[in-house]
Image 1 (tube, rainbow, N blue to C red):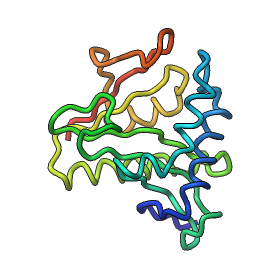
Image 2 (cartoon, helix red, strand yellow):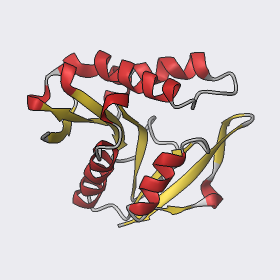
Image 3 (cartoon, rainbow, N blue to C red):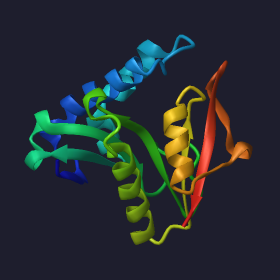
Length: 168
């Protein structure tokens, strides 16, 4: 199967929002009473696209029904940046469709963000991840990301987010 990493199209936003929300729900990553509020954020692809780049992994020409996953790439600061500092880019909301897991889709999406970071001349790519996202942690570490515990944070009480960084 050919997979292309590209910017999401507006007509794909709803499909990608549903895919992202479902991936977080299926993975058990929405605990601590944040599910209802954060599901809205996960589904609001248009809102994210106003402040960041939304990348998708698409198969077979990229029709909306062929979306395999997506990620929010924050090239420089703004309202979508949680932990990025000057000279850094950030990844948010990486999600892969359950039917596409294990096919390298997540890796392709992260590599797409790494490439965009380098093209932008940034020094580091950072991200935050829930402790429950162990599969994603293994992917990040395999791609050269290192834990940055000094940048861990709590978006709400009782919900820690673990920081990772890749020096470019």
